[in-house]
Image (cartoon, rainbow, N blue to C red; front, side, top):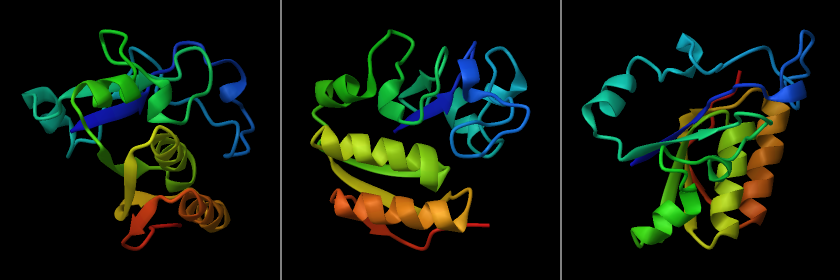
Length: 150
């Protein structure tokens, strides 16, 4: 089990005072702040070592896919998975229509059998979530469960 997270140092125009919630966002997940922490229900798993590693992404530019990040040793997610002979991945998290979508599409492009467990995701908006689900289906990503959207 691995985790990914935004870990922004200076992500350029990714932050905006008037975000569009598609390409720009309010300030979030800034390195060295509480914002890079995991959800309180998940943080104990990370702290206990139940999570094999964490992939940080988006330090100096917007990054939506976990495959754009690296672990503490500078290893990318695709290489890390291949080194362990992983062939299938389950993707969960937020947001279905952004980071989950990008990670699932990259996983499929990298040749991994990819599942998105929709009961364990949440989208930003209904319209963008529907578009993301269609795009993932077209790419051969297996979707199960019911997406959570506002």
